Image (cartoon, rainbow, N blue to C red; front, side):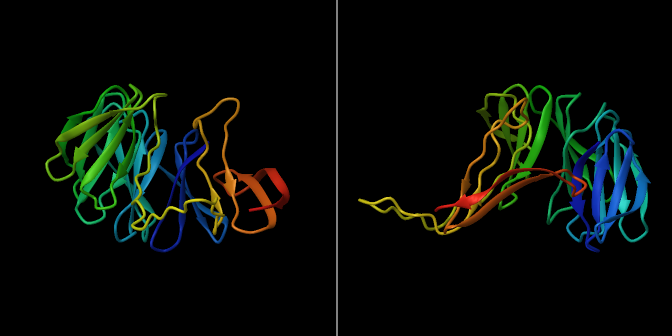
Length: 239
């Protein structure tokens, strides 16, 4: 079924279909094309110019490269048993992929598909995220660890313990101005939706909605194809 998603410079939406070994292309909310990708295409990454979409393959060492203008897919063999996540460096000709079956992080030259370095990163590495300044790469591992890698040297800078076998990860920049109000409880000034925890989950998860002012609060669940599956909440809400 649908898994990874990315957009191109032409505003096309790309979605991987694991079961069909295809990448689905959406334009104007409609499916326009299905491209044959590497087997079990998992995650997608967009190049800095948005003209190339990179595709990982869960059960093969093939890296897919979609030419957005031509609508074609080329593959390069990375010499791995499979890859889970892929991230493109925004300013350098580099890709990072987690080779989950090889317990490695692959550093790949994006233009050629050549593997520059292989870094051992625990058991079954999965998620990837670059720091806001692109100097650090964070790698999750189902061995309950998060590895921090220097993107200049590809050396491991440290390892954080993380329970629950983390997979996805996002690193964001902390706010510059943090103020504290003493003696009263400040009201929220904007709406916010927390991340679901735990995630993945079965059979239930929890999330929190914060609203800045009174009004209607509605929470819908959509699948990767943009189809609404269920309305979880539709009630007046107070800040």
